[in-house]
Length: 123
Ligand SMILES: [Zn+2]
Image (cartoon, rainbow, N blue to C red; front, side, top):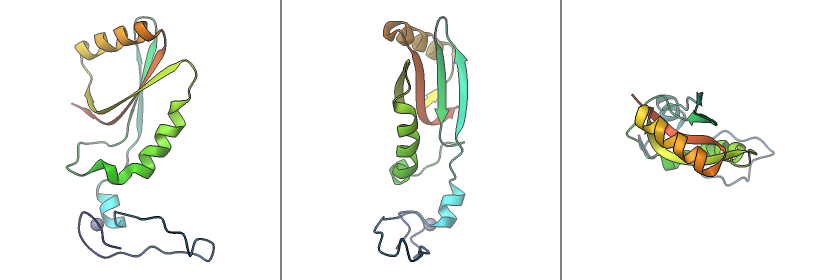
């Protein structure tokens, strides 16, 4: 396979059990290490409800995040059915007082806690 970032050819080691598995991989191990997932969870107490912010990358990389769809999909699946929570997805979020105010309004409107899934939190 050819890496979408560095265009180097790479191979995936397979065992006898997954020899014929046809999952397509887009990123080589070297690029995967260069742009690693760094999942962080922050809890923010709003006026009545709470907000959980789950960020996937440590920094804002100039890469196509769509190639991480498998990883992001798993994170999304683990969060989507939490009882009492509303899940929202943003490319990136900046955590400041205005955002907290908006989140507070959304949580009151939905009458539920919030989970924000984002690729990264902007400084
Ligand atoms: Zn690569």
